Image (cartoon, rainbow, N blue to C red; front, side):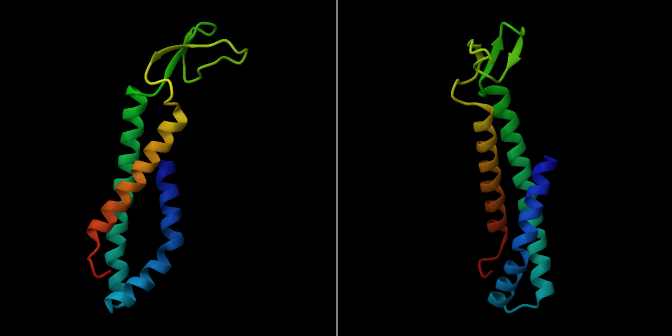
Length: 126
């Protein structure tokens, strides 16, 4: 969750000046008023994005992510094949849904939710 906060904050910081100038011109409002409005909306979107991404990652990781059992190491693993090439036995989840896919899908859901919250909270004239 901390990594998500750092990445989202960095992205927001990079585009912030362009967003505030555009919104100020569209609304014909002072820059301080636009910045205040956008700060709250950005914080809400950022929070929703991180929360949604974390929840989806945890839920998918616990339910449908492929988990295998390694007979050689006598423990569960995310790897379908051992280093020597011997296959591991699928214990639960979908064989095609690796940890990489779970990370991708949870990031995508977080981005979509954060964007939706930001857009829905921003007045139509911005």
